[in-house]
Length: 126
Image (cartoon, rainbow, N blue to C red; front, side, top):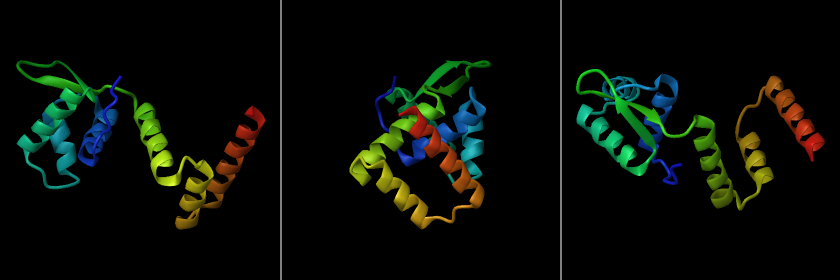
């Protein structure tokens, strides 16, 4: 399992892979290019770095091409990133994170109901 933390650019590529994997560098580049101006060789270099870091895997594709996939499911990577953020930014306080997030965002009634259900379930599980 990868222990490397993905950069912002690497997270963009992981988002593409989680939606379209396995896929070629061409597909990754096409998807990223819809978000921002980036050169093909830049995408290619970034994918190679991610492969070296163990963030993605590679399998043989058509001809000389390769297909790439995320090494971990989205939920695992997002969980690790969230854990790190809670620890480093909020002093390991989930309640401080939630207070900050809810105080800075517009939260719909449906989202509040979902949060209440989640909190009630967590309370039951304790």
